[in-house]
Image 1 (tube, rainbow, N blue to C red):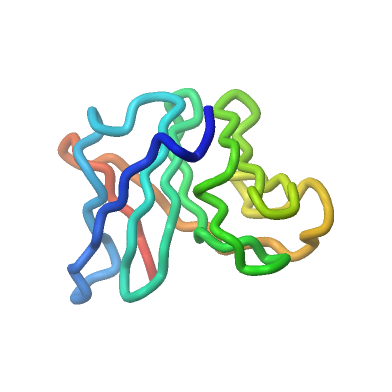
Image 2: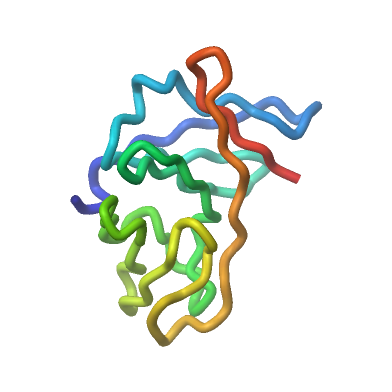
Length: 119
């Protein structure tokens, strides 16, 4: 699957650290959703039933990771600009040219709604 199958959600709750992303049914296995909170974009990925969230920014050149190739089985996303492969569970790059990790965020399902915890 490529990053072309995504939608953007604007998150506006700035009072707390947990924010709703979408109903769990709207993010099936193998899909991702791009969300924005306080000017920061975050990709939320469903890897074979496990949810992960990382900042939508390649640590190599600040390119948009969510537009890259998402491999749900390997739980990775590839930067579309220069090909760095990022582990969605840790945010760490698996290949060069990126060598710095990107930020990850805790994700939960509460009352059938995916929530994201941001700082």
